[in-house]
Amino acid sequence: MRVKSRWFKAEREKSPQEIAGAMAFILWKLAQNAVKSMRRADFEIQVGPQYFDYLAEMLIFEIQVSDRLAYEMLAEEERSAFTTELALRVADNFSENESALLGKPFADCRRSFIDLLNKRSSVYAECGFTEEGPDFSFLRYLGHAMLEHADDRDKSWLIDQATQIEAPEAVSTISRAMKGLFDESPMQNRLGSGVE
Image 1 (cartoon, one colour):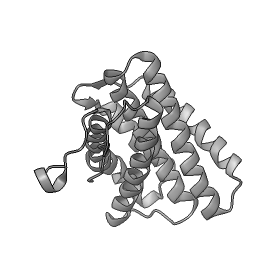
Image 2 (cartoon, rainbow, N blue to C red):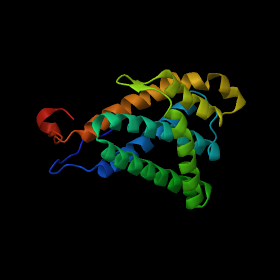
Image 3 (cartoon, helix red, strand yellow):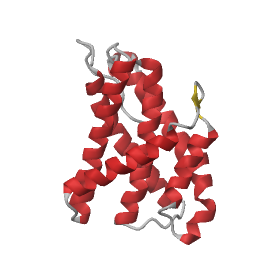
């Protein structure tokens, strides 16, 4: 998936919180794209609660990947500020949408998302992540988390879809986006350079 991840103007250094705000938008689009991809691959993901369950799992995976990449780019205090802001922004965006579309109270949606994020984070923390990206256990946990929401007919092939298609695409896009957002050089004039 192609995303815009360069600052148009770089007249000042961006704070970790500002970068997290931009990343939250990217993660939201990326997670929606992953669920659409799964539906195109003939997974039975019903519009409604099940759709939001899958979306939540993808968003939580993406937050974990973003945090691990931030570990390489930021000092500990800045990383903490970045990841906290990212998680809160993603939680708010997810909850606003779930609340509007399913008619549930925003506060309940947000609390459920944060609780699930905290639960999943403790398991992701035990998984490896190197310069090449997440290890197999990291990817596989996304599939296992999604299994909790899958229809019986999808369970036998969901982990393959998550580990071989959706997760690698997400990791690649997040990596490019993080590099772009943390790059302080201004985006070149497209007409002048032909490069984004």
